[in-house]
Image 1 (cartoon, protein in one colour):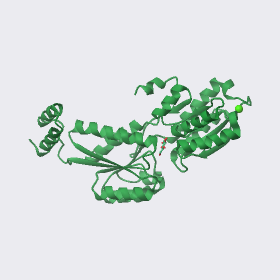
Image 2 (cartoon, rainbow, N blue to C red):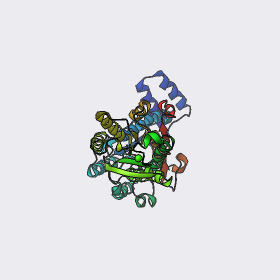
Image 3 (tube, rainbow, N blue to C red):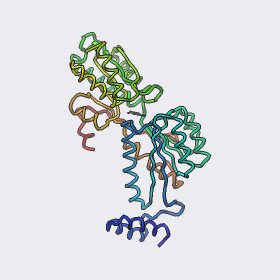
Length: 352
Ligand code: BGC
Ligand code: CA
């Protein structure tokens, strides 16, 4: 029995389940023992901008679950360590330094400040460690010309355009109900995420552009950043309801948490229900689609992001070809497609 296989079996035996012992036997017969060149324990360092973020927390949960599955499937210990940057780039950089000092194999980075990627990449490169950025997209110059640097996420323009299509169809199908003041113009407010985040900038732009490109006249009553946050969005929305009341015909929100904040404010206001659209498809947002309070949302595929990152990380750690593990565009990018969700196809997403 090889050294690797033996240690794998003793670790499993510690866990003491007959099932795993049987799997070990299979291993000793040449199953999933680590190949030559693979280190026994893989270390993945995950640095997120904030663990308080609903969408980001869902990605790290998926990752942790998938790592457990991969350990069993590959017969190999994978250590995943998730650290919270608490929205501070200096804190996150210190966390990255610690991962590198301790010899982590791959870094998975949800960077606090998208413009700060170059320094981080330089450090990782010097240590020979590949970096996979996710959800918060560094500028192209920092990704495109580097070796072993990747970005995994959803296309911001796409989720904006899909959100615009949800509203466009509602405008066409339910014009009487939506155009409350009957002026043929769609009056809207926009709840924006963080200033400078690609998803705030491009979702804001493309949601409205989809309507205007289709010939719909629109009027922006108000827009402001609520930093992806439910409470901040509720506060903004309360002000706008006071100012414009049901003169607001549509509420665009760059994400679901802020859409839910808008719904909180609408409930407290007690007027007619207004059309609200979000992005992410978080569990509470899907529930709100089911009750009809949220008109629709766009899938931001957190599970897909976690899957692609793990496949990429495991391949990179073993010196494999990343193009074999995931579908890579321009050698550096993995894009997860969005889907529009409303009451008509909600079941497909609730079942998951
Ligand atoms: C999500 C937001 C999240 C943000 C964090 C966006 O893609 O839609 O919910 O707060 O990423 O970076
Ligand atoms: Ca109108």
